[in-house]
Length: 250
Ligand SMILES: O=C(CO)COP(=O)(O)O
Image 1 (cartoon, rainbow, N blue to C red):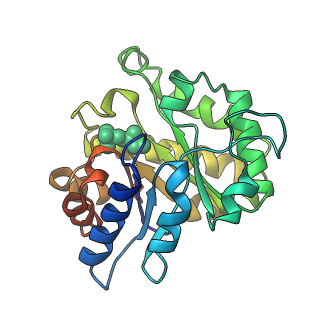
Image 2 (cartoon, rainbow, N blue to C red; image 1 turned 120 degrees about the vertical axis):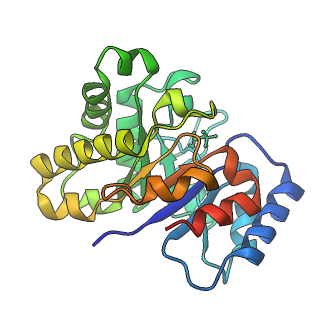
């Protein structure tokens, strides 16, 4: 029906030796049989080394961000073509840290997503509400709008390249996790939204990941929810033991 995915978002952590050691240790511990795709997202300077180190392993190395521009005078930016030239096929877009700290708007995220899709990349598109929005009962509306505003031009065919990650901002790096019921409720809502707009087949095939303080102790219960197809993990993905333990939770 759809794939389970476990993706580690390493954020701005790990230098080159740490990146390579972490890949090595994950590779060493991963069991032969896995019920999920495994992805890790190191920082841009280490993607090429990480890609090479992960060859002949189940690990897919993915990027944390990409530009909406093709090339030229965009100091500090990294294009999709550049990422593809070092073997990268998947990119995370719309993370709440990109939205809140780097002020990426829905329009910017729409441009980035369309560029990535047009170039044949898979996109893990993140959404999630702030605590105040949940407290005031606006969480469904907030998250639906984030998706609709950035992805409304995609066709049903484009959606084959999309993975959604629901990451409530109040659960990121706080140790506070959404309950399995809260995650299921939002994932179901998102799948229904996609079904209404793009049809049942697109919705059924869409992997929706949960992110926010996922760890070995809570992963199994969260992943057991019918509409939760895996996780986008921050802190716990920086430790090979805990990342592999989470991978075994499907
Ligand atoms: O932001 C996240 C993954 O993208 C989640 O981070 P934590 O797992 O550290 O809460």
